Image 1 (cartoon, rainbow, N blue to C red):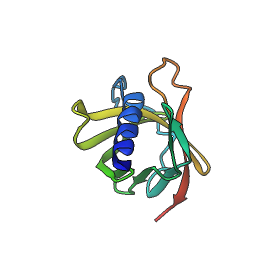
Image 2 (image 1 turned 30 degrees about the vertical axis):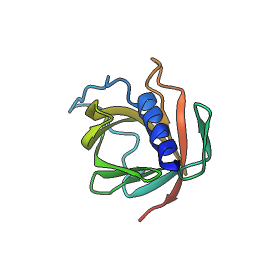
Image 3 (image 1 turned 120 degrees about the horizontal axis):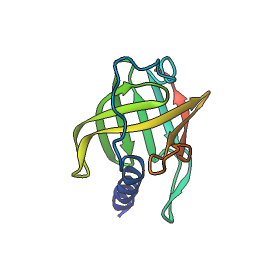
Image 4 (image 1 turned 60 degrees about the horizontal axis):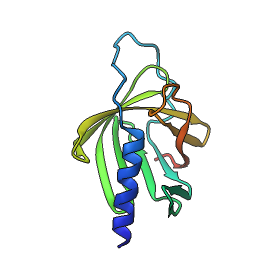
Length: 140
């Protein structure tokens, strides 16, 4: 039963983060704000509530490898793929498999401030609303 809650939370979070793929890669784009901050790190969610469902700390865990790979854990579920740093806060994620029967590539914005990583909501035009914030766990 608990895995069902995790799966529901994953679906809700993916719907919120990745409902639009509006970023177009520009090879001449300015330097990423995340370069040197995200590679080789692990981030875990704090306790959070998603559509009335309370999730304990570390329900969501992101691993960003120094080699450009990522692992995204939601409870017992695991997604893997590659990430690409784009201009500013933009990050393109390429999942190894289609996620929630939609697509494999998603664009999002990630802000890193010290030991906090915030994934910004891309469902509103200004990209300023935090979808959720994770705390840094460790750097391998």
